[in-house]
Length: 502
Figure (spheres, rainbow, N blue to C red):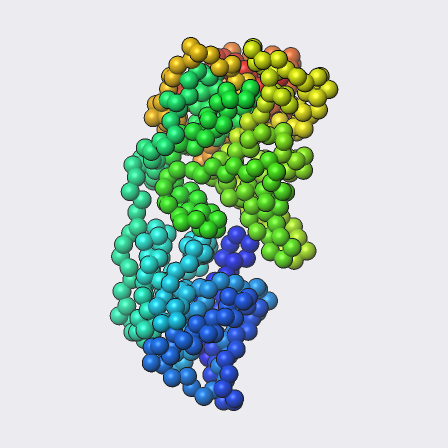
């Protein structure tokens, strides 16, 4: 019996699969066992054609391929190459147990890549269970960005056969696959950033309060809601936010690229976070993931390390808004089904945009609001207090005026965010200010006596909850970082209180 290793998905992570083969006496046949899906069972025809195209004669034996463990569902065309190699090299005495093999076969024996290959290998590398691996040559550019792997690229089935037959002399790919973007290094960790601003804040005229709140939001990764009349620039600002977010570590870049591949998009490996913007008519399953047999990832999971933007926030279903509370608090999303239970990381920046009333004219100085008090109350009651309590910054947009002029560009705002990021990292923080634990708040959010007095007065006057107090401390910490202040001062707490929900 011969065997090599491959992998399949189990939730968001990869599960190692041993591809075993036996050729025994009996009526000639070719079968694949081990809970394989249609793409794998169809591999029999691709493997047969590829082997025959490479001058291989099928022995008159009973060929059985087992995908172990047999109680795990397997899917994907990445098993083609490993199945073909186990049949072709059955006569070779060498041991292939240390090798992982991935690749889809063409009918002529060519080895092709697929989009699922990158997230599979990144997951295996993160689990520290993969080293020597044979992959399609076309995939080397993107796979070489995964650290601590010995990659052997092959273009054809014949190349893969020769490589395993002469594995002692085989040489791995030497391309380091680095990220060619500017970076700075703090405590041995590199943080990359892109100076690319497809949509610039210089296009936003006026709205100075909203721009300031957006700067704080970006620097500390604080959840934010914009409230204002239609056309005042809520979505415009939200779409520009992603370009001024903090730099990314290599692990974050790889995680975002992995989610791109899971979303069937070509990974870019750019130090720029995505923005996921589901429509307000989206179902609970599409936002959070689900499925009867396999819990698929949803918009919340795909927004990991990125921005989740809900436009027309109150129009989302109550069930969606209330279900958001858990991932906003725990940075995880748990999906439970009869056949599977999956946990996805969901560490995202939440951004919401809403009108002040159903008709949108409540805050307008020139248009009359057509809503009565009951309609306005019903509209705003769609956002519950527990949900709003997880929002750090609440911004009421200003009315648009002909005298409004541009102020800050994205380059200037991004420079300030990068400066605040460096201060936080040099302080020893591992997490963004918005994600600090209670213990980290005590360590890093040090207030002056004046600032403490102001916070105590606000706590008594506004009956602040413990979560609200912690939230104000974290926002104050970000404002102090933007101000290059070591301690949180009175003015920082006052500004943080100005973004409190009223």
